[in-house]
Image 1 (cartoon, rainbow, N blue to C red):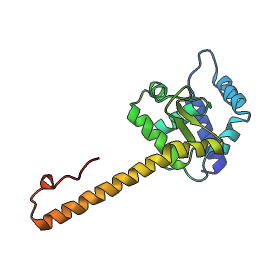
Image 2 (cartoon, rainbow, N blue to C red):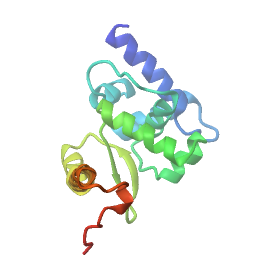
Image 3 (cartoon, helix red, strand yellow):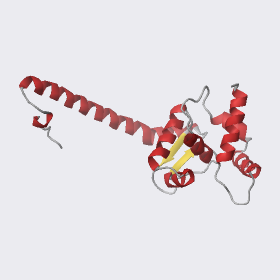
Image 4 (tube, helix red, strand yellow):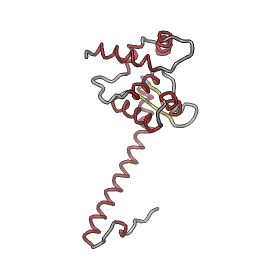
Length: 173
């Protein structure tokens, strides 16, 4: 599908997934999004959408993306209510969108808690420094600890230990 047609098809899908506002038509909802963004909806999508093909987009991910396209912060509880899906599935959809390259940032405290689609490089950098880098470092520490546990298991097999439960536990600080 040519990129322009792909964008138009996605635009139509996103417009149908925006949160329903009583008494407003689809065109009126699109106008609200365009007014908030300061640009036409198709241009907004092209501005924030990553290049290339978007493998892995599920109907739920499209729904979440449509909700986030209004530019407001959405709490996970609001997204769960809007999608009528479980919290875990909403988080997976957000991770799918981030993995594809959609700039979804989040905060977990204060008045600004929730998820938001952004076009601000600084907001993305702040999110990475606040959320992603520390999480990656913790995962690296977990990986190192698990590799050490595997090394101890291999060593214990040579020393005659029958089961990992018989391994001496490391001192926990």
